[in-house]
Image (cartoon, rainbow, N blue to C red; front, side, top):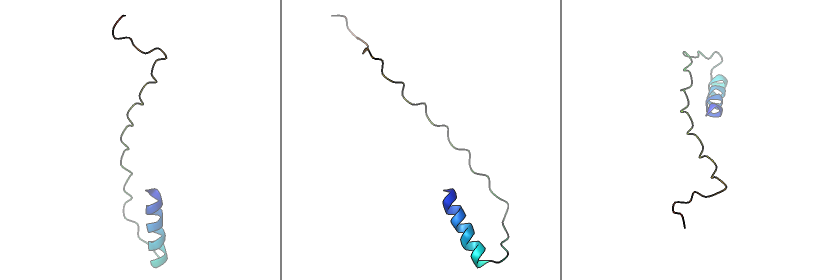
Length: 50
């Protein structure tokens, strides 16, 4: 996403000799990534004893 913003700024900089940047908007806080599934145990859980 930052690449697109950089390209847009490059285009505006080339077209405008003196670009007036508005107040920079901070990047939204990324959503926390869900915890990855724990690796399965080597021994499968036995539901019934046989």
